View 1 (cartoon, one colour):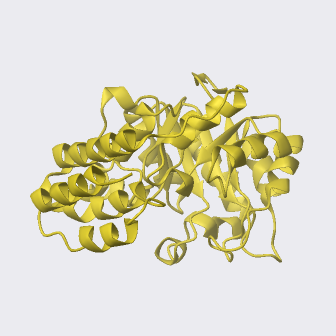
View 2 (view 1 turned 45 degrees about the horizontal axis):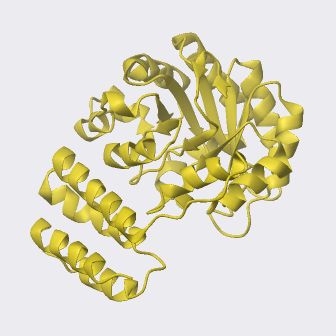
Length: 319
């Protein structure tokens, strides 16, 4: 799997997700086999105004590379300027044309851009001129069911020089409800000469293989399916290679959850870790016996020592 000059070891990519794909999360996904990890979406305006919180999203470590940097905004020249500011932080630039969240939409960015294909073209062209790095775009099917235009957006992106595209086949109006229409990924793959990356409803190795089989996509991007489940990468690669799936043991679950907690503490310190890791630790025990009690307890922890003790107690008695 190649994206322009970027050569990937396998076709499994970890998605950009606001509030999720921070440095500790990316390190976990990389250690479990992701060929490419993506940053949280980074505001071009935040970079322009030298926002401290925005800059912090670019924090990286050598072992996570290659890493893609995802930018969002609604102004072509500002996005081009942002690209020059961040291109040394990663091996690839990705433009967000798909975020459905209201606070992003009301700025004219994310999925709101799907309503203006001409503007999309101007933005991609400006960013393409600003960098020689591999360039991709991630977008949705359209704004709503009455304005499905993913094929048009894909063709514009290719015409303006992108090296690959990622499609999440839901409209903005759908948010994350309903079912992703994988046939749209198949249609896009048939229509474009660049690699097409599929996204949406990938919650198991079986669904990953089915997406490849049904759409002929070049790679898949794991989003919500990776929450507390980095083993989905290994299992997908095993299944794609015709091998039996290896399920994580209780010991492996515990070791990974503890590693994630330690990485977060090392990188962010105790205050942010306490807030950030509650959701991750709850995801790591999903489906296990007594997980409901664990979630209740972990969400009431008041410091890291208590959080760590709660985690250790749960796995000591897990079976």
